[in-house]
Image 1 (cartoon, helix red, strand yellow):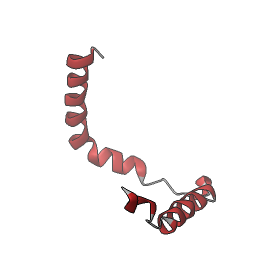
Image 2 (cartoon, helix red, strand yellow):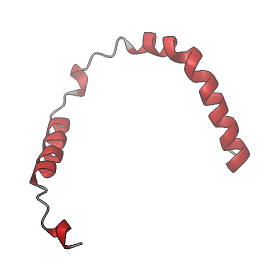
Image 3 (cartoon, helix red, strand yellow):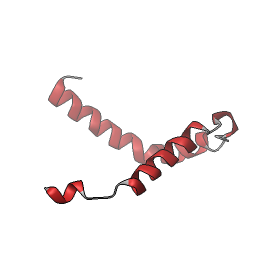
Length: 64
């Protein structure tokens, strides 16, 4: 496992730092979410049966 000590991780560290910096500077009020109700209505026929199955499994396994 000595080879792990010689791996240069500065690239991934910079990527992670850049991601969190961009996330911290994100203005949530500027995001336009007007499309969201229409999207949720469009995917409801697909998602609702899947979610019903998940609920049944959770109920059977864990009593939720």
